[in-house]
Length: 324
Image (cartoon, rainbow, N blue to C red):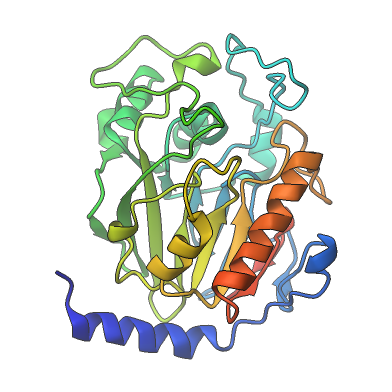
């Protein structure tokens, strides 16, 4: 049972802080990306004390908190597996593109992994090795990190329920669920309970259980991050984020997805749809969107507006620095 006084304080702080969020929803009915009214240049070093959120496609984010950087599911290599052309090949070799990654990742102290499918975990070992970042994720992420050559001291296994204090911000780990396909199943289910051989192909990276995260910035916003479009609603009670990064549902297999999610999160002031772009194309604006995904994005926007009419919807563009 959560502390009601703490919960009420969270709601008060959220409502006070998020009331000033500069977000426009103009043009969303036509599917045009909305943009934060206050954005920063996509290059350069964040000024001391500034907090910005940059979308890197799929459910990937770069969060700069002053001169400190947190990444969520950073998948930048974005290579072709045939997924978006009807020729999906589960034997596709894992590929890392340093020339793409190195332009965007100059530093990181923590990498938050929601689950270990290739479109979330593929680039994590390379980025962690290059930057020295700590990898926070499931036990599967821990064992896959070891298999990829990372030292155990750089890997932080979590299960959900942890609240990790990093001074300028905290990371709350939330046990979550992966989305279901049209057959009420998923690609590459399973976990790794011990260190496997080094992963070589995309099917070597299973779902490995799914987490969500909430980052609370000291003196700033609380932001909830999803990597897949399902959740255990009882695990979300009391989070009450200012901003929710919500994964677009690929199917209707999860019942009442948006209404339950908005209620469980106490109707966030800002909702940001993610995981709707074609993540096998380069990270250039405007994002490439398959026709089916465009329809699902429009459906998500409509569902949020219906279930949580006071929430603002921000459809992000790549690399743009949003401040809430």
